[in-house]
Length: 133
Image (tube, rainbow, N blue to C red; front, side):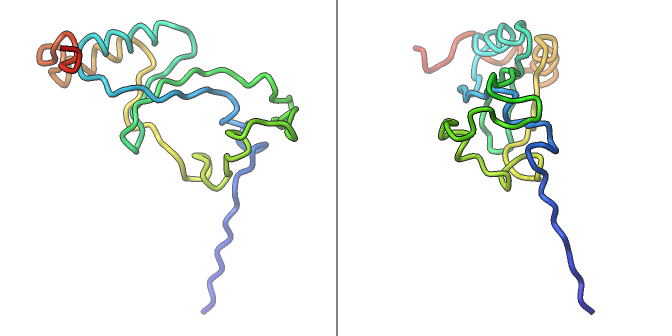
């Protein structure tokens, strides 16, 4: 018996160009209460999320659309786009089942407080990082 599987890759137009609608920046893993306080401060700003991805990286994400993204979800400067965009491969896109996925997501300061309390970290973590000594 012959079985055929067709794999359909989602294109930029199909996913609303998700990767062109945010800026993600690596951050150090929080290891003290001051670090968690900084995360809460970040989350007090509009369109900001902080998450731990499936690779163990901590990320601060600013949800903001690229000013070169057209209404058709295509790049208006495609031939002159930055290398970061040029190197992005659709086969590595989260929408196609690849890339980094959030395993721990914070969108509000209250979520941080709840997490710290649930894990007992609000009482066990030092105020400042041991590395700052």
